[in-house]
Image (cartoon, rainbow, N blue to C red; front, side, top):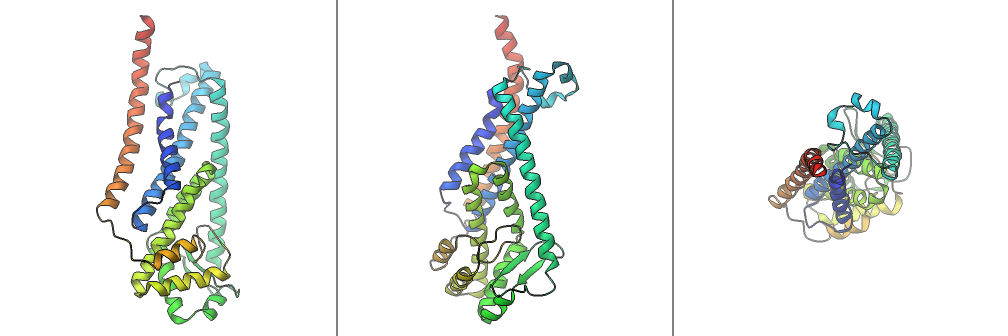
Amino acid sequence: MSWVTLAPLSLMLALGTVLGRAPLPLHPSWSARLLATTCATTAVAALGTGAVVSVNYAATLAPAAAGRVPEWALFGDDSPVPHPVGLPAALLTAAGLLAVARTAAAWRAELRGARAQMREPLATDVPIALAVPGRRGGVVLSRGMLRGFTAEELHVVLQHETSHLRHRHHRYAASGALLRAVLPPLRPLSERLRLAVERWADEDAAEAVGDRALVARTIAKAALAHPPAPGPAGAFADSGVVQRVEALLGAPPGRNTVTGPLLCMGNGFVTSSLTSVTLHLDHAAACVLPLLAAR
């Protein structure tokens, strides 16, 4: 086993830890894109690395069966995987896949429940607004939201939720949920992604209604009476209310028309390049190490 195999995962873990603690000086739309890409890439790197190590560990335990495994799935140097590495990798990978399956099932159940309530307002006096993705989706409001909010405030709510639907923010939320399921210690990164998505919708609503203070007041009003409800059908005021209100009371963020795309492209380029280099180094080790051993 070559420790170079762990390089992509190590880089993504370090990047995820840093981005989970340090706020990005970008427009929320670009922050959300960068954080979502990092969440998804880190989760895939963890599962992929664990799967590769597990397959090679199985080949170590049963060398006779290794011939049935595709060559690309095996380490280039054919070195055995030690038990202290292989066994935890196999167990953690299995646990990660199980957590992903449970998360996906829970999301599907929540979406089915939300879509079943699309025909009429939610029968509750708590002010709730949900963006339900999909062909049969839309914006769901509660009876408390319709009765307790003015027409201007409802306009803010609808603009905010419509932004979620228009930009398919449920996919961003899915990448954060995937990361939480696979790597719970990186939950701060998924929380920062969730905040960026809400800030993105807030800015869209503020631009549509032309009154940032009104958007801030509406968010605060909804948050005072609404418990958090994370998920694919996230509620209007369910994340980082204080930060969102403070941001709306300040000046609009810059668009980052150059910096934002460059950072997102750079993130993907570095990740893909490192993965490619790792594969080449792994195969190079298969050629170099026997020559060194012969000397």
